Image (cartoon, rainbow, N blue to C red):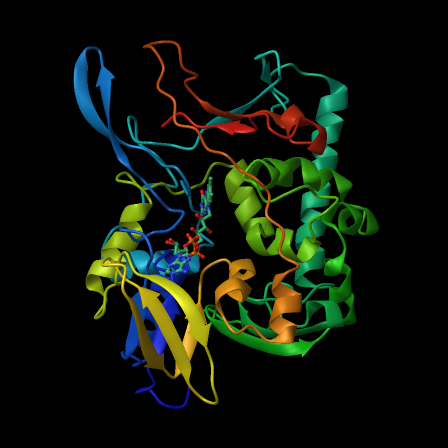
Length: 378
Ligand SMILES: Cc1cc2nc3c(=O)[nH]c(=O)nc-3n(C[C@H](O)[C@H](O)[C@H](O)COP(=O)(O)OP(=O)(O)OC[C@H]3O[C@@H](n4cnc5c(N)ncnc54)[C@H](O)[C@@H]3O)c2cc1C
């Protein structure tokens, strides 16, 4: 934006909306307003505190109903931690701290030592793991060479074989050095990138790395991101690049003692203009050069405010219902399909809960939709 006096409207006080405000502020754009329809910030990072009884003593405990973990590759989250002054625990955990140990279980409840050849040893398993290791290396290599540009945020142009945007900028990749490794602006063309428009399963087959899906499936499908024969490789590799996937396997993850929501509450507290809560954006009109935003506040009254720019961080498939979406926006946003995903919080009688969090791989197929895929002990 050429003018840092521009009035910017940000719809949504979730992680994206607050990140936008933080980055705008850092660049000197302080004339922004965030509208959040709920009475809290953080969006799907919601960590309610509930009273639980432990050995007859009632205590308050933080539960995660959405996001629970992060990894070293979560650059923006880390910037928000610094801005808000609230930091993660991990990746190495001390006794008694929340940690991300997990196991695989079969449907009969027995532990399935998928990735541990020392337990339930067989040569077939060992060979399978060696093959998997080789394919992981191969995938890492092709992403850095054959698919240069794959990790641009936004993936603008991938299906056309082009890339343009901010790269995660691992040192040595696309000209990134230690000094400019993030953010690293890159641009170019690479016809191979078109492969990333294929479903992830086909993409893996094409590159002879089918086995890596065994690693990717747990933190992808069980987190509600869909099945590999439906989801394009571009999305899979954006959310879970090789480094992040390995952090999951090696359990080098971050957690937040007082909940992930506090990251965003802390950022909101430090912003020059914290989110205006209980204020829903109900209409957006964009006459020539202006943005007219109608909000419904706590008192139920409708008020229309004028802005110069609009940032939408809420589900885009709803945008067309309340905004003057163009034909192109309508076409694009109506392609968004949601997976249904349900979270439960359960408390167990002492000694009766699983001690380690776990995955149920057999439920991660379309035929088992509706069955639990992952459980956490927190
Ligand atoms: C079960 C689950 C587990 C997850 N686990 C992890 C994890 O471990 N690690 C991780 O990094 N991520 C995880 N995620 C993903 C993470 O929660 C999301 O990526 C993140 O919350 C997205 O942030 P957002 O701001 O884009 O959207 P949201 O969090 O959806 O925020 C959008 C905000 O906009 C508000 N809003 C909507 N419509 C309007 C309107 N018309 N007017 C005003 N406000 C509006 C909403 O109330 C909401 O606060 C998980 C998500 C779920 C559901």
